[in-house]
Length: 117
Figure 1 (cartoon, one colour):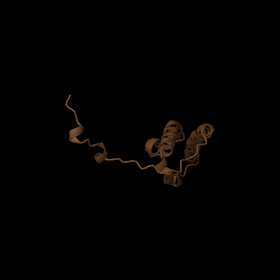
Figure 2 (cartoon, helix red, strand yellow):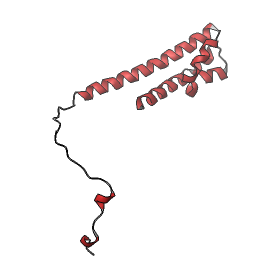
Figure 3 (cartoon, one colour):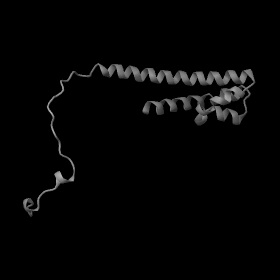
Figure 4 (cartoon, helix red, strand yellow):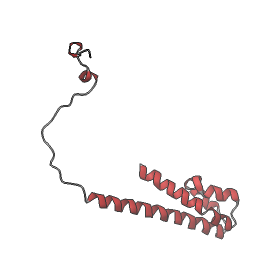
């Protein structure tokens, strides 16, 4: 779950960084704001309504660059996981069942055992 959140943040930040290239392609300020930042992932369906080839190319390049950054993040996270998996030790599990008593009844102390200090 954390991976999805972190990946989404990387994608949104990357799209936000590409807003200037979207504006340079001749895209309107409102459309560039829609395609970058927080609403970038939700605006994928809006791409099919872009008719200008320069704007379409700029949007596709921005999305590709943002997905590239997500791919780099996930590759690094996978490498860290593989690295730390080398330190997992073989442990023999105990086959004997041990019952643990929990709850408020276990914590209660009889009144006669309490000493006044």
